[in-house]
Image (cartoon, rainbow, N blue to C red):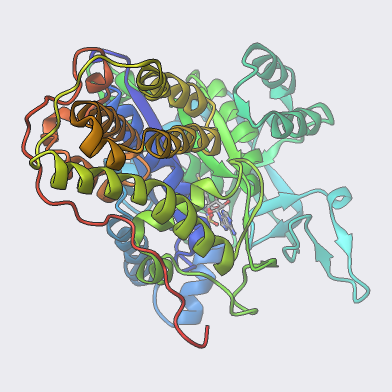
Length: 518
Ligand code: MSP
């Protein structure tokens, strides 16, 4: 489907005070699968990720580490760049908010907002949570028996009083509500949309958008006492990477904006679905098309935290279970949008069940039979029976189903549909029993194995976004050339050519065997 419109997808930019864990890996993975899917579907994709390097939280972490913030961020943002290779992400750009291009974009956006009268100077007196880098109203807080004030996220709040610029958020309440009404899929899943709308309906206060009590951030143009609120700075990354303030035709902004999808965790939905569209509309720019808020991972039933020592690093999963099984598990185990729990048992069950038994065995059985009984070549196919047509039809219908599910980020449903056909194919092998046909009707055996090989080709083309390496191995074993793996090859008339020589098969998904003592 060449010539379709461009597709722009972004991850949140990660705070560099933390080392990457599976929560971070998850958000970017979901985007990577969509980016790969869209490219195979013929779209011109821009996929952005990066690091959020300013703010009080990062400044404090640098102090604790005993280095200046720039040295600190240079060092720790590398952890997130390393994750790209480890997880096999295909982002087209990696933005750091300390880069000159970003400082320029933030200051340009600020100037537009100021010129339009959307920003004014006042003073802030209220609560601030450094961990969330967020301002909270008194009514949102709980007080502990010792008098500490906690945000709804559990973050400790401190009282802040300082001169501050404000963004006229209160003036945007009705226009935001109208925008949500006019764009019912702007926020997904629908439950989250309702939460955001209720929050906006309850009334918006003007938002403090500058700080004066620390330095680590983008200076406010023409008033260098102030640095920009880290969320205004951070959100702007999505247009910095498109070359903003250049919005001329021919540039990336004109080509890719508005973003098709900002993928975020549920904790940062408010910033993306309320503040960000308000900033953009106030600057006369278009809001993004969608913000999807996914759920959070717990580990063996517990919140992930440094103090509990149960933080799961992506590297550990990859070295234990392999990269593609890790990618598969994270998007298959939990309906996308819900919270989910990572447990070793669930991971091993998926690996040995869905991957080794269902997908891996199907491929191995079929390719071994072809190797032994069909002179190691894609067999000739005779006339198709009803059963053959049914299986080929189910495999042929998959692209539309997967595309439809991914349009609303329902990864689990897309994967379920693919595994539905894997199940059909395994039942077909058992019913057709090609090993028995070898003596009684070799021509029919050839047709059955052809139908299976062609079904596997279709499945492997579709599993590429989720499991790129394993799918490539399967397609290699079917001798499908690298340039024939796009979704255009799922159209009529592109099926496997009989007579193509096939190399001896090798297992793609080894079973996971627990070591003694585990
Ligand atoms: N820097 C901000 C985002 C700015 S975007 C303009 C930020 N960074 S973060 O590093 O704290 O979080 C980044 C993402 O990781 C968020 O989408 C967050 O929801 C996600 N996760 C962090 N912990 C997580 C889990 N335990 N489970 C799933 N995702 C989690 O917020």
